[in-house]
Image (cartoon, rainbow, N blue to C red; front, side, top):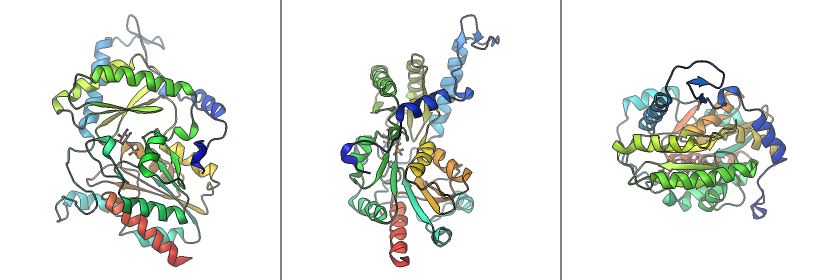
Length: 352
Ligand SMILES: O=P(O)(O)OC[C@H]1O[C@H](O[C@H]2O[C@H](CO)[C@@H](O)[C@H](O)[C@H]2O)[C@H](O)[C@@H](O)[C@@H]1O
């Protein structure tokens, strides 16, 4: 795709957005408590607004605490500080989610004679997780691995970052990009971008007093980072984000790796982006195409689910700790991601 015209892979964004918005499943409709404690459906919920807010905030806080553990691992390519001996819990987890490196022969055997399409998350997959989101740079050797993969396989970056921002990190024009958790290729109607601008401003105001809290505008989505916030202040972050979102009924909050992701309440995610990319690239033939999606966080699970539902292709989770996942295989960190990508290139070079 020619990025110079900065036009993403889209068909008719307005029609698709209307279809998306019109097709909003009921479970995503906003639950609103009417004055006097009646829900929009007229049911007497008998629950005070404050009680509901407390439940929402505590739910968010539980999810924040369960997000990626505070592990200060310097895993920038070969400087992995994790202990050498195998962690029994990780070994037990790998029985269910085997290493994609150890399973490489099975993966390529199933791809023999078929087309492989590669989808790559950015943060925690191509770049190590670091404290400052602006410093999550990709190493030259990882860039070379991705560049080489793109020589043999259609390759896309699917990121929560804005499309422009993740392109600035990756710097490879020959790739396809789906930014803002897969929405940017759709160029949803401008009001999503407008909401993101407005909610960014509100979030910056409310978290400005919390040390370590930062807000990142990713065009159609906004990230509220709490990686550098003292755990005692996490509930305050959750409460403030929840309060701001009350004024934005078309936005929701989901969890990433020590980040609250503020996203439009539309039925669109990285999984839908992968389906859209496969279709628009003419790779929708599940008999002859093996999509491989590599990612590290909860938003990547939407893509893993799609591949599992299609019974075609492989999700690969990047994690150093056992996690519930829809992925088929696992890799420990970005250095193993790079090794896997290099395996793919070597296999293709020697099998043509
Ligand atoms: O979909 P991704 O490409 O994985 O992007 C998801 C989020 O990644 C970034 O945040 C994460 O990485 C940061 C840098 O390593 C880290 O500081 C932060 O704690 C992680 O959550 C990015 O800043 C977010 O906007 C993305 O949504």
